[in-house]
Length: 232
Image: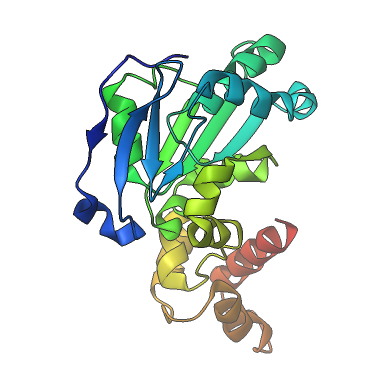
């Protein structure tokens, strides 16, 4: 997908200091497509971004043929995202899903201005908070489906620490962080009444496995919950 032509523009780097952005500008490629340049790094080819995107996606074509879920680390101006969608559609019709993880909200905003996301099969999570991304149930469910992973190399080189944190993330297991995701009102109430600083495993160990007998139906509820966790 080609973007509308636009002149190069400078963006105030102070608004992006949380990502250690020292410079952010948008340049025009030789093929008249826009290319974001951050800290001197071109996020796409300075000559033919669309051709470059096709080559990137060609490298994972065999995987996309077999897998209709794709996780992309790095948005840029989405040339590679749309090439991936074209290929996924050729193999799976509209039965596919793409999630893009992008820590720089400014880049995403520029894409929105150029109407880059009319595609209902694409979800973009633009935030530098890894923990907030993992709070989204749709992301966790998507990751459990074992999607193909595409790393957008220029984005990864700019935000290496962020993407490593995303890939290595371990959720906070304390009750205070987990309880809001539990649907059972009875189990939620039970955990709310416990020590919020304990992990769910620690709470179950303390209230079930370190006691000599079951006291009430809540004990059986905790046992069932423990079994579900261990199966997952």
